[in-house]
Amino acid sequence: MSINFINNWKELEIKCKNCTRCELSKTRTNVVFGYGNVNSKILFVGEGPGFHEDIQGKPFVGRSGKLLDSLLEEINLTREKIYIANIVKCRPPENRDPLPEEQELCINWLRNQFYIIKPKIVVALGRIAALKIISPNLKITKDHGIFLLKKQTWFMPTLHPAAVLRNISKKPDVQSDFQKLKSKIIELDIII
Ligand code: URA
Image (cartoon, rainbow, N blue to C red; front, side):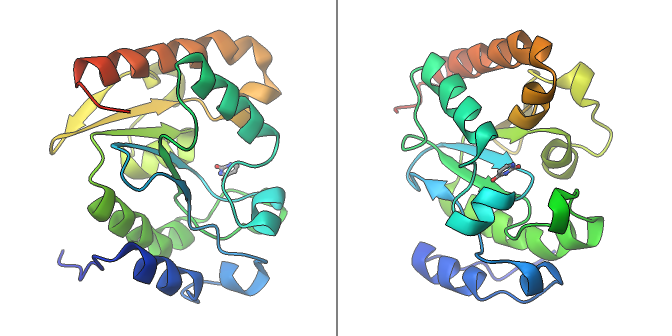
């Protein structure tokens, strides 16, 4: 597949924020392009904006964002040291899962972000992101915390913070995945 990627981050952001490729553009308040450090070699990918993200135009600003911040802090990271994006940039109504066609119409924005950032590590937050960017055969309950190398980038699925909030007994699993992330950062000598 040949895609004409944009090289300039600001230009990409402006184009994305004017996107009307799918129906989600009709109900959004803001496009949630992403947040963080474009020079980071660590990219986190969630599924799509929720209520608060749609209002504020930033990813993971609600309750699951608070949990994400504390998980990051446990391994000496902050959201300013990584980049956080989503599979779909506009909120699906009633926080439903983004439809396969919405994901497909939106994914090239993420691919272009990936192309500019050139991350060494990508963390997929939750099942939807993991299925889309790692493997459609993945089982999040079994495969979380396992790194997979694809074309010089390491991909790791982990549980979505919202899923952990719904079932707090899963917190040690996600904490252990973040420890594996920390080890991988050290192993790859990534400068934070
Ligand atoms: N959940 C996501 O997957 N992404 C966000 O930005 C917020 C909540």
